[in-house]
Amino acid sequence: MAGNSPRIGVLALQGDVREHVETLNALGVVPSEVRTIDQLGQVDALVIPGGESTVIDKLTRMFGLAPVISERIAEGMPVLGTCAGLIMLANHLADGTADQQTFGGLNVTVRRNAFGAQVDSFETELSMPTVSQQLVAATFIRAPVIESLGEGVHVLASLADGTVVGAQQGNVIGISFHPEVSGETKIHEYFLGVVEAFLSSTQR
Ligand code: GLN
Image 1 (cartoon, rainbow, N blue to C red):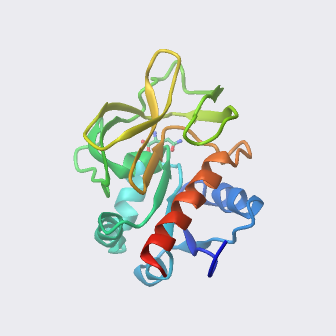
Image 2 (image 1 turned 60 degrees about the vertical axis):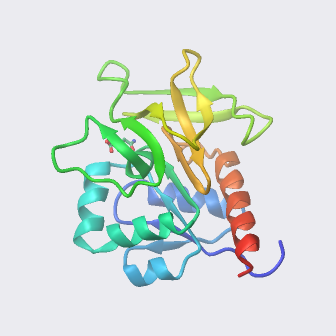
Image 3 (image 1 turned 45 degrees about the horizontal axis):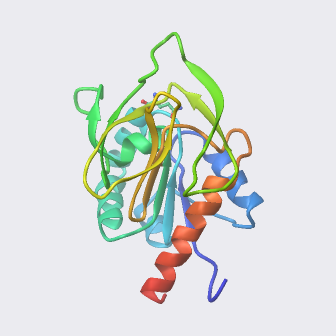
């Protein structure tokens, strides 16, 4: 890679932060944990973990991070959200709580907890040709789905029945499932490529 290593942050207020850090470590990247506006200012790109979107929403608003994250995303900061992270990136939310807000950036409608109580969690392998020639391991845990896609959004992954579970719009990538809990590295590797392309285009 030319120049400095990209500075990757993991939003570390709630959720499976450690698993994302370990997945990035496996790819030779040492991310920093982001809990403050200052720390956000020191990263080039952000990973938003899975966990509970209502809690991530509340905490980021409480700490004043939410509007700054939205602004950075709107300015082009590369961002990867998994599960609750995807929910936080959706421009529109279905089945959110009454006052639930998102950062936005991905022109989609995401439905929370879309698989219902009967199918709380499951594992599968998905074809994601944009990301990798190989199948990608996907763990779904109380997962959301992408119910509708607006202009400029590219589908990254779908289930056999056509349900969209991964999408990208520019530098914003959101997926319904957790690659990080099974040691799957391909999506993070793809994300790092997006980050590098962004940084070389802005000639940091
Ligand atoms: N159901 C959770 C939410 O609404 C997401 C679950 C997850 O991230 N594993 O935020």
